[in-house]
Image (cartoon, rainbow, N blue to C red; front, top):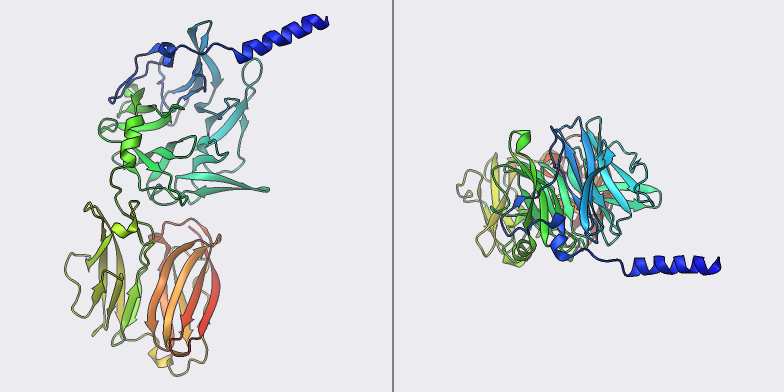
Length: 488
């Protein structure tokens, strides 16, 4: 008996260690490899359904999972699988009913999938067993969207969700017993909808679909500082006037699978295209600069020196911010008024307004390839800013913003005991700087500024603002912090 058991174990060892790999010409259902022009990847589908949404392929290439559905939103969804068995492809087999968009874990032991519930995409997962897969279990109990869940080699998890009310590509952060869905922020996420995505196993790039005309696929690269580059379109060979969505890239980063279709559901198919050269070439072409932090609206008074330097972090050029040159005009395209100067080298506006009025100022950042980005802010010149209170101020004070909680605007008031260099910055709860609200020399007095969160594309939550005053004559520094609550 002992000899028989040892013989069986040895046979299992041999079959595991020396399992025959799939022949190269049999990979991908033995279909002819595409070049730089996408072609339909032939998948069997049921009558009335379409072979769409993302697919997933095991590391050894012997299992190909894909979904089929009847439309968006879908009444019928299922996941099918082809398997390479006994030196040939067999199937497709129905693996899961009521689910779509399969994604395998790094070691192929878990399959993630999506189920639509009450208009939300919810992630489920199933664990591989000796005969197939266990019954799917819901991954997150949150009522937030959980779409296109992905696992990486770095043991990080990504998904498309709506933590701020709009669908963003996010990272799932697990800290002790807390699970936080954290948007990747700009420049990947915009006021449009970003949902279908694929992140490389080493997190070197993300390919995603943006639900904003044109309905195209974009690529963003992971930077060494942890941020992401300004996305680039995958180009006209892949993107057409139709929809391109639902991306999946093979483990060698060689082929991209995606869904393409037009107005009619029967036009939708899964396509594939050679993409390794595109991924490499786009990484080394010029990145267009973008606005990272909106310049806040400004307030000054007639006859008082106005000076404001917008931060270097306002615009980001992924080729290096030293490539940027700056210019400023009125939002109409006209020149700035004669009293207002702009120094592009220091990014500083300065001048003394002779009369009350409002200016809408456009700042333009241009890179060495002549690509540019711009943002507009308002400079409101009033007859005075609490000048009647100037003589009765007896302390430095940062007041609580009003209203609070607020949406989308609130007013911040503060008093200055002496003339000084004033700086007010806005931070999130993790201590990340969001924007500079004030950065100028101001005289003794009481001041109001208005903050409009619509300009910052932030999610609901708590934020804090810090007033710092440096007295140039005495060298003394005053600092005070307040917390505000934004409800989107």
